[in-house]
Amino acid sequence: MFFKLDKRLGNDTAEIGDLSLCCVLLFNDFRYPWLILVPKKAGLKEIDDLSRDDRILLAEDTYVAARVIRELYSPLKLNIGSLGNVVRQLHVHVVGRSECDPAWPGPVWGHSPRQPYDMKALKVRKQQILDAITRHNFSA
Image (cartoon, rainbow, N blue to C red):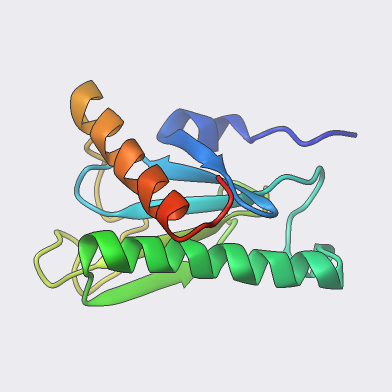
């Protein structure tokens, strides 16, 4: 069995690159700085499906995503979570939140239909994130 990204995640995101364990995806909604980390292992649904070493790598990858969002977007708060009620494949959301975002102070999940980036803005945002990952000498 090999890793395959759930097509719902693929439809709603743009790929940035890879970290130690996870592929890094940008949620395609320009209103929020929102990364999604997906461990590149087949059949995972919950964090406790990971080995001890992979749980450590997931924590490190989450740290990288949080640092990147904080550096680039200076959010008031970071929301980090693994829900999986709709998409069962293990994935972790890392979302920068601020008082001016449309869902504040409630959750972004299910707040409103996403508002996709235009192609130029998506390209710029992806490059900013990749540059931030690279600047910190994280793998990408």
